[in-house]
Image (cartoon, rainbow, N blue to C red):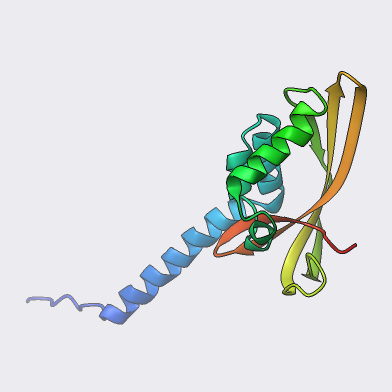
Length: 152
């Protein structure tokens, strides 16, 4: 007696492949939490690698700083040269999820944004300086990207 093996329909295999693809994609997306992006951004900044930190900015921020080289020079000049420091320490606070947020008046409203406070500490020639700023992180083209608040 011969038993014939039933072939599984191709559409079942396609559905399984799609489920696996999206599961893997979500795993890597969720693995890189908003706090991780902020930590990565400020780690680059603390190392003086402003070019890498610029790459992590949201496209709305890149409109504000369209020239990468100018961003690098300005950040370096203000944070490193003016204060005469080579690096700084930073702490990241607890994130707060917002359902909707705008970087500035007239800009596009962003959905599911995380507000994350950052405290930078500079030990400079002029003493210890502490800067506090809230960062905002959202997903853009399947990647976490950083923004600052310009609603003033």
